[in-house]
Length: 617
Image (cartoon, rainbow, N blue to C red; front, side, top):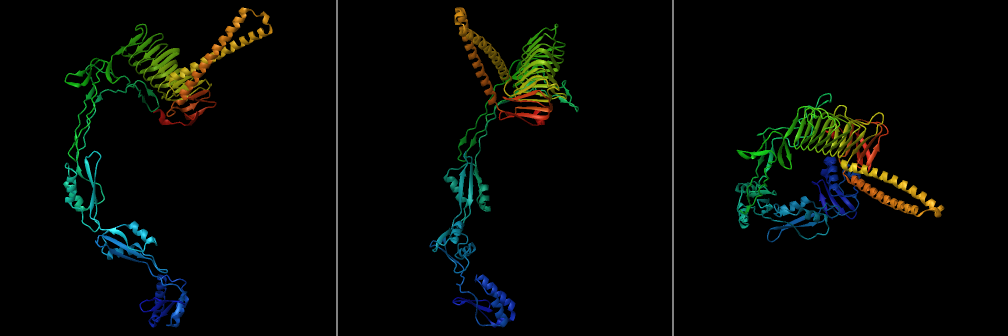
């Protein structure tokens, strides 16, 4: 049996009777140290079921005879690793012998030590393969796990061939990469332009391994700049930005909606397109650049190029600068120093109109440009091709009609019909009016209420209060073009009229048929002919009614298909009873008052939540 000792203090043997230990006389000089040494040895050798009490008794009785301290068991032998080189001395192989008994398995540190002993400490090792060998019982022969590797490198070329990047790999027991190796590779692959010698020297000297580093660099082409126009006036003019004081009052005298210019004023400058600069690859091949796209000089109505600079556009007349269809135009402005009345007559002008006074009842203004009215608007018709502002209010008495192709701004609107292709901005109130906006309707002043009537907007409606304490019917509709809403209303009225006519025809026809059935001999040929005509008329009415209903369903389907994002109604203070809010094709009728809310459509229903303050900014 294998024996073991510990500094001459005891001997350990593995026999048929069990594991035995025999203490030497020297162990009795320090029994505690001898006990500790014996215990550590037995545990290290993974001896099972040790009787430590017997060891204490032997030390106390100074027994030098061998005695059993554990049941019979094989001696623990740890696993071992053997490493060797192949005949060419460029590969390392290992063999792992498994442990015996309760011995320990070989570990990675044992492998590394064996590899070092074999002279392969600097070789490249396949650690994953080594781990598999250690954990497996299948490998009993020498297996290759590493090799000597010379330094190497990979060079990648960018897609546009303007850069070469090297990734240097370190040597493992072999020769490192030299500068000449890299230069030879570049030459073989015809890389001749932009070689960075300093970068190559640094990579070699400092051993910058496993990094993609640039060693040759061409020149990417620089595309030309497209031509562009620099404007010297606000091309987005027309959206009101009224000044609001600390009390929330809006100063409609400081809107700066209408910009004017004088003859000779610079309006825009064209920056011509640039040709750009060609590039070159690391192979020395040229790379064509994209030349900038030029644009025409935007000279329009009543403008001209500057004599000293053909790219500078000047106003040729006094008026209002406008950008229309990518052309800079100067629209002459007609100035009315007072009211539009019998002293001026109706106004029909291709440019813009500035009325310092009011527009009195019975008069008409038609202007292709903007309209600014310093006073109020009474019962009249106004057609505006641009933006319109009424610094006071609109008193329509249910007869005023205003059609505005841009944004409309007014202090208040009372009993008027308004159609605006842009936004509608009102300070104080909208009362008993019909408002249709292809943008949004915003009441931003301190009062900011909507009372009665129908207010339609394609995007959103924002106000402080809507409805009245007396529950005056007030309709707010958002989503879809105002034209689509109007057409749907018209179709619903047509259906009602047709249904009434069908009902009347049905009753008359039913009465005639009863008379014919009860007294057929009393029905004349003329009456018979009349019954036939009534039947035909009723059939035609039913066909007409069916067509109306199909048209109505088509319009409703168009509303359903509209996107709901951004379609909202914002009420900062109170929604009164009697208010009906419609978004797309979903409706909600207010039975009780509601404060501080934002309404939106979701899945065919109206839902509301807390007021969203930022929505009407």
